[in-house]
Amino acid sequence: MKKIILTLLILLSISTGTRAQWFVTGSANIGYLKNNFQLAIKPGVGYEITDKWAVGLSAGMNMISSDVYADIEPYVRYNCWNNDKFFFDIKAKGDIIFDSYLESAQIGLSPSIRYKINKHWQVFGDVGLLGADYFDGDWSFAIGTGTIGINTGVIYKF
Image 1 (cartoon, rainbow, N blue to C red):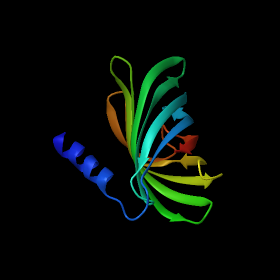
Image 2: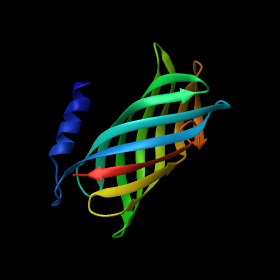
Image 3: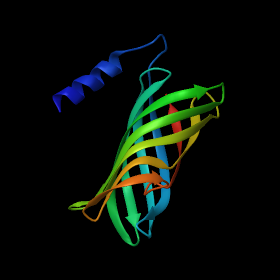
Image 4: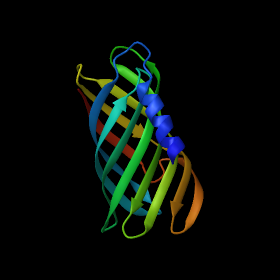
């Protein structure tokens, strides 16, 4: 745990000539988890370390069928390509859904597209995942939409 915290602090202190920037985000996820409808709403906060790297954490609620669970999603975002308005990112993320026990989890890589509306506002969309799924006591390989399904949201940069 100490190594993870130290690594994050080092990443936060590195800059490549651009001003690092805090941002807030909010997202909604729609998908299916083992044939059960899933809806998640998660506000979050993040930090752009450089113009290529960002880290963030979203937390909120996740409804699976008619049951409501807590949902935490840490992520690291890497910008692969951009022009003035569009950004293509790869996110390494985890998604942990729990109540009094672990309901489901997911970890992997997800493609993401962002659109810059102005200097403060962006909208984004994530589709799919390549990684691993945990549900009902079993881990399995995840490819495609998985439990995250379609994730859309907004970003406000300070």
